[in-house]
Structure formats: C-alpha cells, structure tokens
Image (cartoon, rainbow, N blue to C red; front, side, top):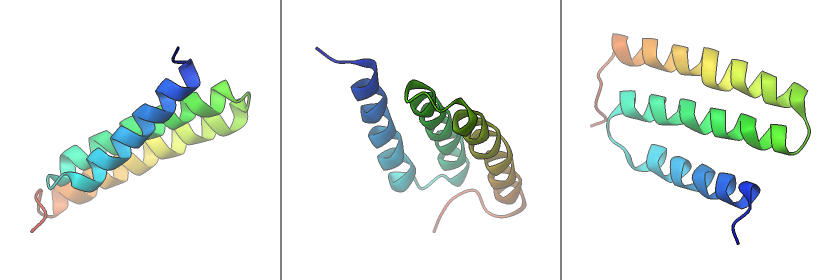
Amino acid sequence: MLTVRSLLLALLLLSALAVARTRDLLSAAVIFAGYSLIMATVWQQLRAPDIALAEAAIGAGITSLLFIVTVARTGRYEK
C-alpha cells in the first residue's frame, strides 16, 4: 500500500526528471515550481513547518518568478 510519503517522493522524482528532460525553459520553470511545492509538502509531512514555509515562499515563489522573468528576457527554448 502506498503511503503519502512514498507518493510524494515518487512525484518529486518524476518532476525532477521532467525538469531535466524538457527543452522548453518556461515549462521547466513551471515544473520546478511544482517540485518546490511538493518539497514543501514533504517538509510539512516531516513536521518541519518552518522549512516548509521557507521552501514554499522561496522555492516556489521567488525563485520561480525570477526564472520566468529571465526566460521572458531571453530565449524560451534551449538550443
């Protein structure tokens, strides 16, 4: 039987592989934001709410916004 933690770890692995495999940089930034939200949920499951909030704010919020702004100012697709 799958537990919540094993499901979250599987989602982390799949999203990490998806970020590494995509050539569309905007899609990679959005998938990375999803990765950060899943990681924040993992931290919450591990009873570390302070780290979970920091991961959600910094990883999914600020870093993803900076990635999207950078992609908007450069090319969208990796060569």
